[in-house]
Amino acid sequence: MTTPDSLKYVALRAQFPSGVTGKITLTSRQRIQSPGDNYFAGPFHYTVELDELCYAEVSVVATDSPGWTPSGWTYRVKEALSSGVRTYDIAVPNAAPGGVLWLPDVSPVDEAPGVVTYVLAENVAVPGGLATLGEDGLLSEDQRPAGSGGGAVDSVNGETGVVVLDAADVGAAPTSHTHSIANVTGLQGALDGKAASAHTHDDRYYTEVELDIAFDEVDTLLAGKANTSHTHAIADTTGLQAALDGKAASSHTHSIANVTGLQTTLDGKSDTSHNHDTRYYTETETDTLLAGKSNTGHTHPGGSTLTVVQKLIETGNTVAPSTGGGWNILPQYSVSIPAAVGDYVELLFELMAQPGTSMFLDWAVVKSSDTVIARANSSNSATPKTEGSQSLYSTPSTFRTAPNPFAFVVEAGDLDGGNVKFALIVKASGTGTIYGDTTYNMELIAKNYGAISYTRL
Image (cartoon, rainbow, N blue to C red; front, side):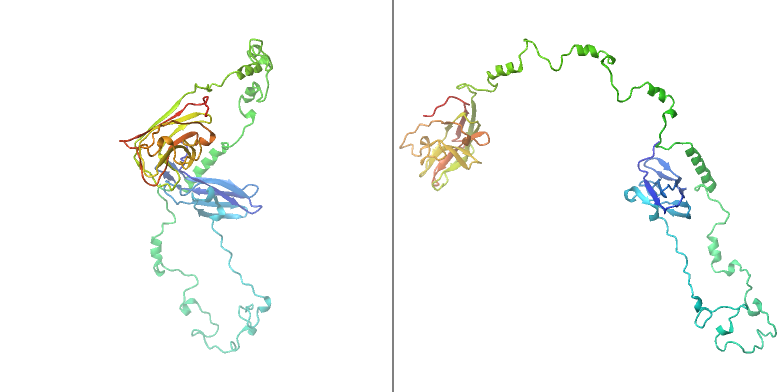
């Protein structure tokens, strides 16, 4: 079973000064588990030798892999180096930047040696300097304070003559003596919290012997294994040389005879540079014949396909606006038809209007979002006549009119996005009504005859 992805590894690195040799060992008796993966791991043991650059690197299991318990355990690190031997504990966090942890960042710092005080020789055995003892173990006369010697002593501790005192004479304990546990404050309580020096642990722990045996077995097994990344010589693989001897080089060639059926296939092919006999047309002959033909999408005068767009307007009536003497476009009364330059188009219409004071109507071709008059029916130009289209004159009771289609051949200035748009235009003083509702609707029919023979006299 492969190791779960949830078990995280960290690259532990260390760099030592030039000339340092030895190895680093990391061990942990900790056994961890991942309930989500149904997997146990541990104990752990890693050993890495310093290379010729005094550098060492080893990939170890993080001590806080997500989902693994317990978390926060530690490794016992042993540096067995030519510069000295150290043993300490470290944690290896999964969150190490870039998955890399440098050993100096987590190893303890050795304490500096104690402070040593030096005294100049000229300051020894002088007043105010450092005192010395004579061969009798006493200060010499010249180093004693004034008045500190020469007085007579009658007795010491009640004794005269040569006096020798022992500890009992001055109420002190002998230099070598003992105490009972009860004579040392708090000693019994401290001892009660300690295990006997000779004790054992339950089966939650591996003994040192068990662990050493296990590591020795692992080392023995690993010694008989190759690294995961390794190579073999051809001779190390049984039968490989014989198999290779029967193979062609990766870069090789064949003659035609070596390829089965190739010569027969080639015999049935023509040269890349060859000509055909008179059963075939040459490219020049074909182009000449096609030049005398029409395109598939061509038209004939008087025979073009007719396109018709019919629109019934019942959206509502409009009161003629006050246009200030100019012409206004009424886009609500419009119709569009696809067209191209040279097409013949026309507009047929049926409408009803109630004239107001000075209300004039006309049909026009409009562009640019209904803001520009490109062609008016009344003038066949961009400027409508003063009173618009005769067929839409505002006083039919006085004048009789007969409507004609608004027709013309499309020019580039008539097109707006590939369409010709017809719209009603008005010039009025704010009175009069143009009808386009369900009672009095307006009907517009736009036709495109295509390119035809057309003459405007």
